[in-house]
Image 1 (cartoon, one colour):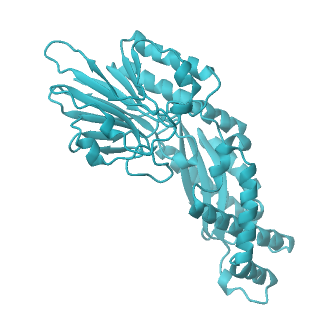
Image 2 (tube, rainbow, N blue to C red):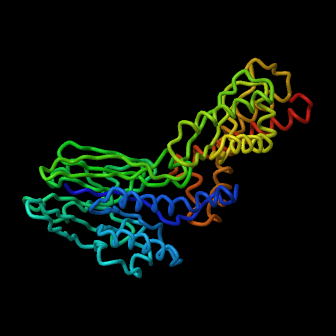
Image 3 (cartoon, rainbow, N blue to C red):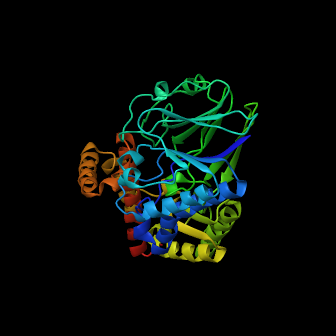
Length: 421
């Protein structure tokens, strides 16, 4: 039996984005989480006494300049080396531009595959099948064509394992890299394909196992859920056994709080507390990081929008009381009751209708809003420019959402000033 841990998309020391601006304590937690999750991965290798660790790309997060990451990585791989555990690494689109990839000297037990397809055959004890590990790294940050055809043929009589960084047929939120199909991979005759690039776990076991392990630690709310690595055992009869093993330190989750019918501020805070407690009990990771959305119809809608900062402070306190729980952001998506039945003589109701039905929908407003957003986006650091959307459709949807929220906030503040909140 040949046993190994398969991981990918570690993104060591990935720079934080908005978290660093909101909460320094939370930023520190998430800033260290990728390292701690990697240590857990190494610990798991040692505890399970596996034969190898496979890293299918994006071990780093781009053009790193600090050698602290290099020293940390070398220390962890030396732990495996001391235990006689081999490491096999390919470079992905982020690793291809990393200085660390080129400068770091690894132990002899670590194999970093180059930009040409290579194969390492591991000799084993008498009577055991040899193991052939195939790999190919990205030479450049982009790989617009399939790389499968460049791999060497499967070795007859051996257990064949391939490492590949690929978007497969494409995935939302991920650029297209080294595209290929499941059928392409299975046609190689490899027993196991260790993939990387897509941050969501996926497993196909028919016709040769093909596994996208996800990532060992999420970095923001768009990488929600508990994260893990994959423990694999391949018998000498070439049967493959796959287990998911949790590694994430912090687990991001979007949490909806139903505030329908609540008309007392204390009841609202109580509803938030109960949802946080429910999510904390369900979470599989050491820490839970939530983005709360208040939804439903409530007389408190205007006050919630006006005093969202105060409610966020309340939510933070409740999360701290729950324990190992954080509120990364609080969004208001609730509405006041019977808005459509409000009299047209009500000036605030008429103002709200005018903004939402006429101004926000007008071509001139949309053009001006897009121009302002484009100017703002151009001033952002490159790593932050996706915050308004990864493509034109997402960009337009984000602007529409922000404009709608702005209209709601204007009316909420006017309502409060009029003494009706």
